[in-house]
Image (cartoon, rainbow, N blue to C red):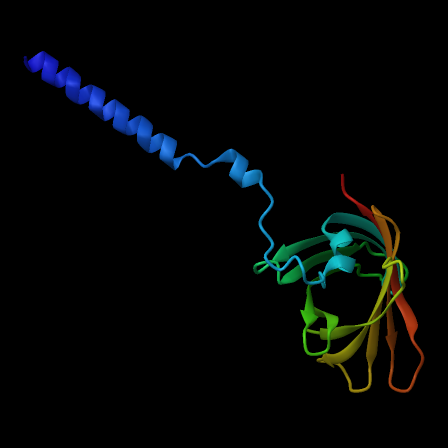
Length: 196
């Protein structure tokens, strides 16, 4: 009788363990199902930026010299922003004898009041640049962002970022600066390729 009771209890515990495991295991089909978009009727403000999502590498040239870039674009904070992580390495060279490692972190967002895409960029040197979308070609493959404010720099400076997609896996970024009362001059140009 004791052996029967022990076997019965063991069987009940095994069944309970299997039930627990079944309930704890996620539904694989549900995981891969696309999230329901209750706002699908509304236009997608990030549509022109979605082609950036992913990891990129690039070759840069300009005032700091010749460098290598690593960059990643990803949605964050419930997909309300696109985060940009960027690192540039410039080896010692004639234009930049000491070499340089530059890092910046940025966020694309959407300004509902202005009805425009915005871009905030935080540089390792302490500069903070706030941009607004100035123009976009009809095909959506060239975007120009112009600064509306720059922190920790002399007054009167203006920055401009231009992105021109050559294909879905390649784009050119041109960063230009204008001193007070002066025309824009290209500071650096980088050709990015999507990492496979």
